Image (cartoon, rainbow, N blue to C red):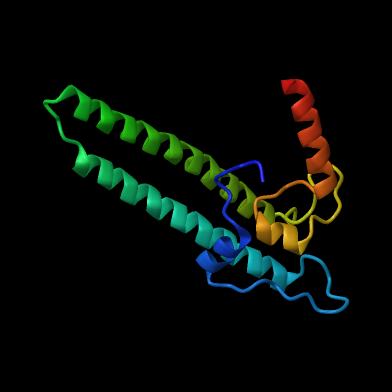
Length: 149
């Protein structure tokens, strides 16, 4: 996966305390049971990130020391810079999760934003904030790579 902040599907499921969804024969896609499954996953993930954010902010407030040694002060500043960058990425992730939760409430969850086909249960368990099917995501990454090169 391209984004480092996306946890493995096993970690995401374990955060929520759920097992992988078992599809039943002829089960309707994005039925109430599946929606509930993903809502639990997304809400738990979001809550964990928000709690981590609060703990990190308290840690940084309590750990701030005005070191007389310039090297010690520089090390502390670099540590805080890395922590703040991580928090910024996690804040973006929280916003993506909240956006996805809104999609659940408007019946748009689980379908590709570009072509409208089903994203798939397994893909959504691996990345619950996925908004593109695998084909559209692949094309998007190819385009992105062409722009960069």
